[in-house]
Length: 338
Image (cartoon, rainbow, N blue to C red; front, top):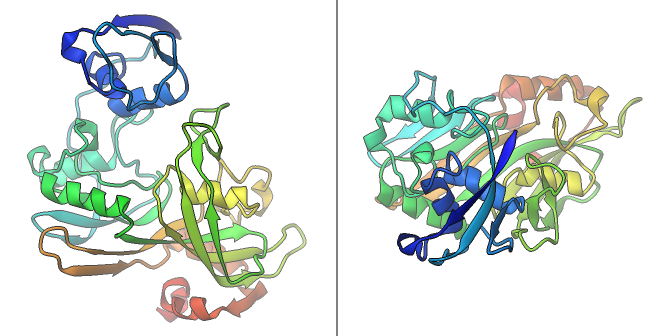
């Protein structure tokens, strides 16, 4: 169920971002939820759709579609296991497990990384540079079923600096992914803007819509696997993010017709050749950056988790061998040699 609501902006609202105002006035549970509705074209300012960053003026008439949802519970700490690879007074490096949502949303109010961070650090000891309690500590995200290394910040100073470094492409982020099909060239780049899919809010898509944002992914081939009786082969890739759009690698791989193995959203039609996976084969294996406060250079690597390694083992006899780039990561992708 949904309802149409009208809001008249007052003098106190002058200059406020549209998504922030909608959250503040109670139209939506959070600014991120408000932004999603704006991007879907479900919010109108003086009869026109606008961007979520649109600055509201006193006297503006805002008409929005609001869903009838139960009131969310108060944000609280939860004793959720965290695999912490580094921690100091400013930040943490975490190896995130599959199934852990990064922050609360309308579908996941509890059981998130934010809840775990509040339990571990305390809400008063997490950055809040995004201005939303449901994003405490968060400076970037991994999809729920994507595993591996990610950053969290304790102070606003560290959090703001890390977000700037990620935006300025200073933080080096690499992922391992197994994709459908054999990619013949050794390296590649996908430079294609991404926006929310017009037909479904939870999906993203390469788009030329005004709301689309630049997205760049580069990749190196690590290993190729011969086609089988029911599949067209596989390729193991090292993907580097130059931007951080929602579902970026998954969308870009699907766009070039090499969807991530196991992807339930962007790998449709390949259910019988997902190598036993019920999640996307995508793992954040490398994170390298300069500490925002001490300036110490920090670098971390994380080997493939067991379920992804098991998928590789199923096709090991079809391998054409590791490439030169793959040999450099042998200890991360060959469990029996760790």
